Length: 299
Ligand code: ATP
Ligand code: ZN
Image (tube, rainbow, N blue to C red; front, side, top):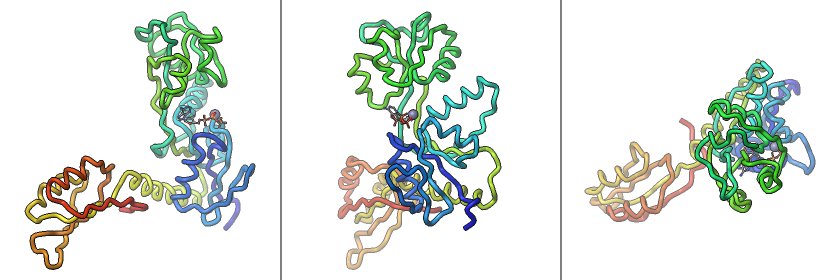
């Protein structure tokens, strides 16, 4: 394979997005070797290499074309876009897919005991954040004048240190906020990991692989929640049982040798299958229930 036609995908080197990004690429069939401290992992069976970098650098690397693809949090992508807009530069990025991992939200949080009655409570106050462009954009949209204190980390301790009245930071479980006696009062952005690409032209060979990777990724994303259900059902209860199978349009129904009153039912359920659903199926007469994970699915 011509080395110049290889693609690169930017992935966070070490952090919350690293394992799930690499796992997604692996599930798309990419085989690569990874040595400690190595910055590039070479794909062994696709013309796709992984560039391991800080997540904040990924949008820029994709815009510059150093990577044709990238996986980063929407928070980082949006911050970068707003920063470029503020300089009058065009976006240069396209979000191809939401990856359903790395979920978090960019929130405004107030110290315990500090009153908050909506964005107007921020007027004239200091708000500490690592996301100044997203925060300023939010303040502007709400006609609030506040002082944005830019910190690169440890934002949650800014109020305690007297550096800010409020903070604007990423939250997933809220445990860190609670540990710092802060409470969430406003959500500025709902975020998750996204697959990005450059809007610049790429060579035909790369474009083919980008499309192929996206199709595989769709297959992976589609089956992530999906399950394959198998059960035995009384023929008479088939209508009720079909209705109970979550999201499944047309289950496969097969005869059972020597049991004219019963059938075997197989169905792909494109949603999570809860215990409650299985219990309801049982109550409707289903027996021998099996729920299997799916690995790959193509239309
Ligand atoms: P580096 O810049 O060195 O790559 P980082 O400290 O910016 O690392 P992480 O803390 O690993 O990065 O977070 C990476 C991304 O994970 C965030 O940008 C965000 O999209 C996502 N994320 C999910 N949950 C959280 C959370 N609770 N706090 C921070 N980020 C979260
Ligand atoms: Zn970062």
